[in-house]
Length: 274
Image 1 (cartoon, one colour):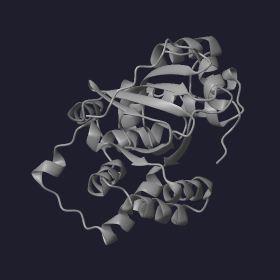
Image 2 (cartoon, rainbow, N blue to C red):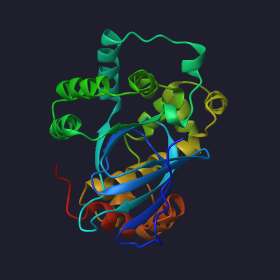
Image 3 (cartoon, rainbow, N blue to C red):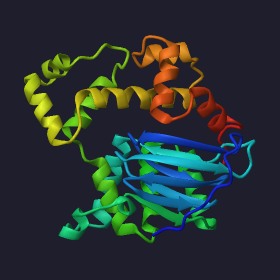
């Protein structure tokens, strides 16, 4: 069990609490300017300043961050998309053939989120990955970083899980091609040439619904555009198929527990540098 931090009384220049985040990409975080607490399924994991953290794709969690210096972003993030995950899986499969057993298939939160202590070697590796724009080299560098991890075997299993494609992933990929469209269940059924009943049943088997996928996709895209683009709220709302900026603010606050303005100010100050 990882140690816990008791943050001081919340100061909105330093602290932020965000709920109900769903990772649609695997991520590597560097907590170079913060302490971080992640909570999911009644499990709490705490990370101090100077940790490199791997987070598996598809995890739903809440988090709280306490900045060290309020004038800079709290952390740096490397996002690993599906294409890069598949490349990474191929590389790791050649170097470390996967051996599945009953224990490896029974996984909890600490099998999906991993920490690497921040030393001179890992700092250089993270910086190199963070600045790399060529996807093949990026995947190779991430594989090398994984080879240095204490929890390498569990992390490789996590990469395999992140790279897998489910039926809900296929629906998500379809609707994310144009989130501004007014998606309906019958449109999904037509796209996959199956009945609406079949769509529902296959999603029920994955413990999710079409409308949950749609809501997750819209909010994830809104969050990405808010933090990674110069779009104003009316344009973000239009891009994600939400009728107005005021409704986007309301939906965003209900989903994440903070307003778009609070999120943007907290994470975008100072820009990202290594």
